[in-house]
Length: 311
Ligand SMILES: Nc1ncnc2c1ncn2[C@@H]1O[C@H](COP(=O)(O)OP(=O)(O)O)[C@@H](O)[C@H]1O
Ligand SMILES: [Mg+2]
Image 1 (tube, rainbow, N blue to C red):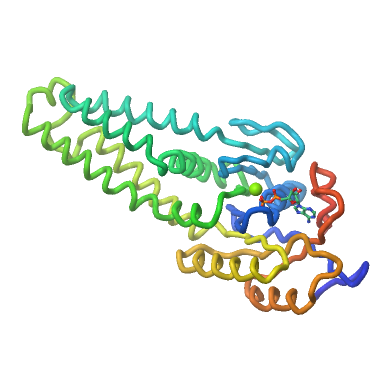
Image 2 (image 1 turned 180 degrees about the vertical axis):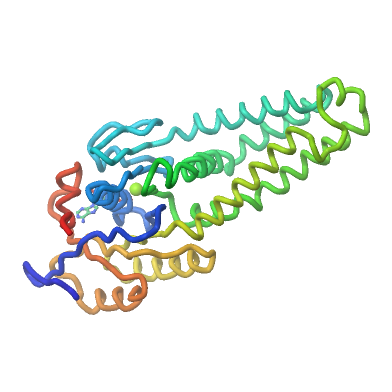
């Protein structure tokens, strides 16, 4: 059911799909941010309360929408909000929160060790990423109460895959703290009593919190597999198709659902054989095509023009 018009090019409508959480993936420059914005706008125009959020620390959603965005959601249209979370602020909040928990839950003697542990962890490359992931997990809990659709302009495929594995990454940390905690209990049971903690590590407030956090990540990892889909974006080039093919396999092996594949920036003189290859490779997911426009599709009007918004 290809509708063809103009100079023989087909014109597609952005599908609403049934996944509440929609990620956009693909190589740099293919048009992930542009497509995330265009699809979110389409969802909102169809009456769905939509939050568009960027988890790429190099935010560019505001550029695509042609409006300033910030750490808090900004209303874009009647039903569309957009947000570019501040990764550093998320990281600081997270370190502070854990520090406060530790100060409350642990005896004084152990605090220097905990704070060394925390500084070390905060400086590691994984921590900023996991702070943003944390924020995304929190936002996911607002679906479907607050949002019918959560559209995520995400960093590369590897980042998405790591999100799924965060629960396992947290386990060694929880165990490390548990060991420290047991040592402190052995060394000074009295201090534990003074600090208001119980001597059973089972009802230790800090460990309880960490275990709760791990359960939350596990819940999120399950939801990422059940309620989310990844819409891969590519441009019609052989090398890009090869890379998209690998990304699709990896995502599917990790348990992600693949949604509609967007073939973006299709030039008038595109190699039809290559387009056929793309459509065949992603026949199961379905594909939509978007022409290469002479003007960059920036701002709401241009984004709405990218694909027909009726129907
Ligand atoms: N269909 C299109 N036609 C013309 N320019 C496009 C199209 N889609 C995206 N662009 C432009 O290509 C550049 C990269 O797009 P962007 O969405 O930032 O890609 P990504 O997020 O994948 O890096 C931007 O300048 C954007 O305006
Ligand atoms: Mg981008």
